[in-house]
Image (cartoon, rainbow, N blue to C red; front, side):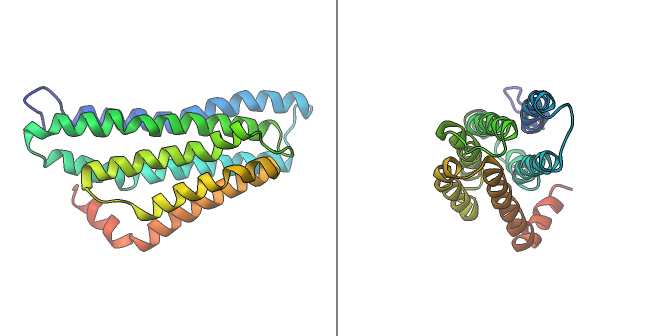
Amino acid sequence: ATTTRGLTLDDLRLVRAVVAAGTLAAPARQLRIDHSAAFRRLGASFDGRTVTAVVLGFGAVACLWWLYFDVVAVAAGHRFEHAPVAERNLIARDSYNYFHLPMIAGIVLMALGLKKVFGDLDSSLKLVISFALFGGVALYLLGHLLFRYRNMRTWNVQRAVVMVLLLVLVPAGVAVPAWVSLVLLTSVLVGLVSYEALHFREGRRAIRAARH
């Protein structure tokens, strides 16, 4: 499908691919840097806690990926395809330009938080780093809320609740060891994904089936 001003659905798919790469690559780059520091401090060897922390961090990143690509991207693409031609460029501008910025910024902040967590699992986080870890994911979810409202004119209540919860957890990151902050973050995200996967199972199937 092509608009009269040259915008295609393939262009939007490319944007989604870039977001996916950013979601996975930014934290991965930070983890590689941190792994090098961990090797130097731990005598070039992993211990069980480090491996567990890496698995938890990867799980948190995987949750961000799922939250975007399971249904949100599919529904937005469907909305774009069936919008009047004159409206498509406006949808693309708002959805894939303005409202993707907080998502990308949130991914970068989360990556910074993960790097610091892996750097010292036992120390508490500084306030700025705690905000990067929890607030970054909250910012990512804010982008989701705006993205959905622009395309569907509805709010995602459970993601709004989790966004507020993550902001509430920012002070906790200053008071507890870094590994506890990582467990809290991953647990909240896994809980959100599990809730949506089970509670909206039929709706998710219907949306995905409509694309085929």
